[in-house]
Image (tube, rainbow, N blue to C red; front, side, top):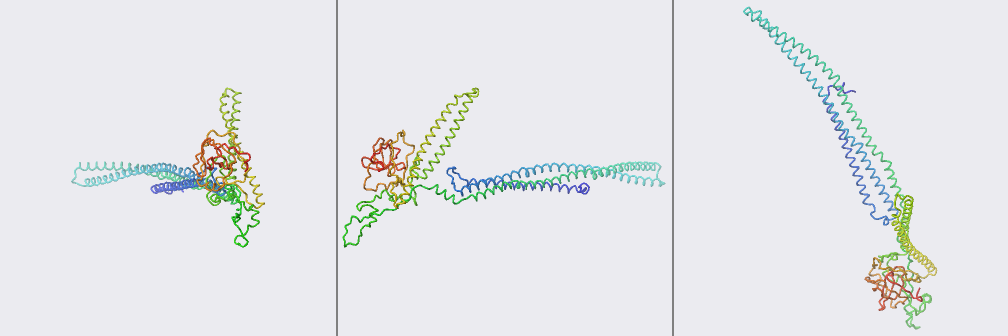
Length: 564
């Protein structure tokens, strides 16, 4: 239906209606703005939440448990989900809110133009009506004046007392008024005809055209609202596939949780490689007591126990037993004493030391491969420069090539050193496993020696050879040790035999309890070898005993004492 034909007399109502339409459009735009603000805040809060619970440690320190990795995967998927919420907000901002605000301004401008045209047409019609009304009023006045002049003329013409001049004057006035009335009549007729023509044009051409433009504008506004409603929904629907993938990723992360694998990782992370402590031997303190046939309070030593413990007069060496030291035997359920951090990881248990060495070797191999690739690339570039001197000077690459080769040699040296330590650890572990298997078959505890940090090894035949090259200066950091680590190391009344001697390469302050102070070039006696923990037990000529860093001394073992 056309507004021009049906609503020709509803200009004011159409004015109000079009204004309401623009207000409604702007109200919907405000709704969209608040909605996209919610989406943006939601995405921002999700990203803040993900950042808060993401691991802040390096990748080497991150837990490798499947439950942790799955949780991190959930966080990553949630971060992607937050990104999709940002996409929704961005789509709404550009394709809905921004478009509505621009269109609202266009509608306001267009509506103003159409209404101004309508008001101009109405003002022109009013002007024509005023002209017609003025001519009508004038015609009416002239007619009344003519009637008055006619009445006066008729009265004087019939009055016998009236003079001729008075009659002639009234007659002339009557003719004049009649003529003016005729002119006013013609003018009124012309103005009326003009007004009727303009009024017909106004209500049949101008107003229908203006109202049609207003109707088109309002219908386009309605269509635009429908389009923005669809865009509003499309912004959500476009991200549904990606959001579904995010949710599927979370479900997959949940399925990836493996409790058995996590348990295996716990074993791998904390396995020390040490053998469990053996049984305590029986100590018979009644062997030196006198026995009589009538004294039945003390029984004789069982034969089985004598066979197991040795001759009646011998005393078992409990100092070598791993559970003899009360502080260190609580490692299983208590806090492990702090061990000095050494380059070869000898302060760690065998299994952990093997893993750390293997990880370092792998890392060094990666660095070596990078250096080799860089060397090959530099050599190729040098060949290109030699064939094409205009591209560059080949000699300019030589310092970099030499530096790369030097780095490669350093890395190879480090790899060889770490592989030597790794071979030593793997050899000890294999020999320990063989002895443990043999001990289990014979049902007796292994007689091991404890290291200063409480760990022990069964390999008492290992030999420390004097190194050919010692560092020119002491290592960067001196070991820090637990003050109570060596409390029970010197409880034996019988001094250990001397198995060699050593010369101090550097001075050592021995601030921790259980360590021995030594000066540079001081000669000490060796009474216990390094058992893989980086510490050697020594004795001064004054008789004072303690542990010194193996890397600080030059050791010479007596041939007849090796392995004792």
